[in-house]
Length: 204
Image (cartoon, rainbow, N blue to C red; front, side, top):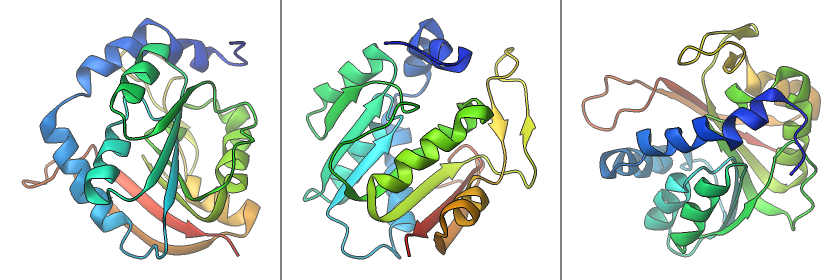
């Protein structure tokens, strides 16, 4: 696999494997099920979903537990994580970079969760294009929000985490319509997440 950015190599390598160990728990899965129940409340007629940057597939597993009838697929840059996601048996998983064009059959909803924040800002449009062109109707993003683009240190590494108004980019560049949004706090006593702001968008 040929990479265009340092960030891709970073996540495809050892750091990406270590991330797997830190983000694999039944408690996290339960929180994801609860979050997806909230995020999909305004999305109607969804029968197929694709995740860009699925890691070990916890979001896809949560979706399958919430809606066993969903047809799910995912793309993941780290081979070890992609293999673990495939082993769950809940989705079609492909090992690859989401900076390359994805020409798979469109689905009803595409999404990223904690992925856009790790994309080199110069290549964000390639991921945006994949999210929009692969979706028949809905695009959902669950990321760290900031009103202006900014870079913050990530576990001792520079240029590995970028915050911005990703939803605003999608609305402005592709004419998507905002349907719903929300915030999940890391100190939530019931189903915590890592200060995630999510946006459900619809194509015109």
